[in-house]
Amino acid sequence: MRRYAWRRASRRQTSDLMLTNIRNTRIEWCDCDPAGIIFYPRYFEMFDTSTTVLIERALGMNKIDYLKAHNFAGHALVEAKARFRQPTRFGDEVAIETKMAECGRSSFKIEHRLTKAGALAVESFETRVWIVRRADDPKRVKSQPIPAEVLARFNSS
Amino acid sequence: MRRYAWRRASRRQTSDLMLTNIRNTRIEWCDCDPAGIIFYPRYFEMFDTSTTVLIERALGMNKIDYLKAHNFAGHALVEAKARFRQPTRFGDEVAIETKMAECGRSSFKIEHRLTKAGALAVESFETRVWIVRRADDPKRVKSQPIPAEVLARFNSS
Amino acid sequence: MRRYAWRRASRRQTSDLMLTNIRNTRIEWCDCDPAGIIFYPRYFEMFDTSTTVLIERALGMNKIDYLKAHNFAGHALVEAKARFRQPTRFGDEVAIETKMAECGRSSFKIEHRLTKAGALAVESFETRVWIVRRADDPKRVKSQPIPAEVLARFNSS
Amino acid sequence: MRRYAWRRASRRQTSDLMLTNIRNTRIEWCDCDPAGIIFYPRYFEMFDTSTTVLIERALGMNKIDYLKAHNFAGHALVEAKARFRQPTRFGDEVAIETKMAECGRSSFKIEHRLTKAGALAVESFETRVWIVRRADDPKRVKSQPIPAEVLARFNSS
Image (cartoon, rainbow over all chains, first blue to last red):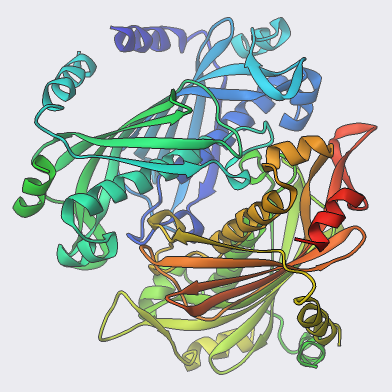
């Protein structure tokens, strides 16, 4: 039933949560495989960049700066789901619409819709957690509550 | 409720469908991001290779040969889902267990479990379709029923 | 002595050959490694895209169309050389200046200069050949003279 | 003339410097582009891993440990050159032979030869420097002399 609940929550909250972003990009030769269509892990790279851009806009600074500001190591993925509705090929101009669908105490949900000439090609749903470097070993990371000032930005805008 | 049904189906069929494969690999520097952990789209690359290896074993030939044999363009993804339970880092030796969870007329479901020292790090579920090059435009692709002899191999072994 | 000759040739010809292009891009998290700087194979991806954009401009069509128009499989690299002068990091806005440095009967030389805030970060030199699909086996490729109408475009503009 | 000198130096020193490594790998679907052959930046990823494996063998520890042991951020590339003699395709089993060709005070040269069924497909030459995290800003890096104990390992074996 969790999936249904998530659906309802994200639908209900779209009126409150307006943190969204659209960016345009082009599918390149380097993104495609011998079938001539995009190699799907590339979509996840694009969506990761879109998530970064969304958070940069919300926090008003570049990722390198918001990582420093909060001594944190990133917004690691705990779950990702994507549906591929139609392939894209090199040369295709696409738009990626990204929104903050839900935001909890230490995790948040992002949704991406990639369209080609207005038609949905891929939709993706991700759940991310806030991770910081461990004090005892800065090379390792652990999850942690999202700082209050960040949460405020994620929930307004 | 679809997710639950899928779960039951895949559990029920594991006794019939024994097409599985395990391969060992190592997370490399090139797979990791500035947080020092794997950049998750890399997992999807690894899983794609694991799916290829599974099908190569089932069909008894390399991908380049099974594509030629069936004049087809690949087994494109229509849905992917992954849960990331613990991060992996460069130098980590991991095992990827892959199995054919379900096989329909023109699509099939694959599951991957990536473990580190026996502990589950990532699990992934993919639905794929059989795609062939279009006769009218060999640069474009379309989905098509899985050939009977392939289906027989996918369902036995 | 070949390197010197190449230098002279490319210097001499810059007055004749004006096929150049500049594009702006941003180094992203997905481009960087655990040292926090760009993972250099990513530069080669960017340069490959820049080469494509240069040729698209010269030929007045997208890559997918110029491949079809000439029944060819791409402009494969035979030699690449790059010097990395200073690192770039995620969030860095960079410019890539690309030019056709030399153009022979079946191969051509491209040079790229990637700058950050006006300072040179990377320069790269590539030699490429025109490859077509083999008639006897369309899955295989072979090099071939550049078509006359393409050559004319590469040498003018 | 520098290229010739380098050649001579590396040839002369092969008798003294025996730090070499061979590893086998397979070109995968994810490494290939719409021409059906390997997308060349992937070679640089493979060579980077080979360099890591070579240094791991020389130092007797994994990269994650040798980075910690020397508080350093990696062996960044300052120059790379590659010649692509014949293409490889998905499914090709290849061998990568890697050797330390030269080792200076703060930089070293590595050569890679990738072969398919014994025939040379790619050769690559890289110059790398030892980089450490800056004390004033651990997110930034700078080059530094190779530690004496590392140098000893690089020059013997």
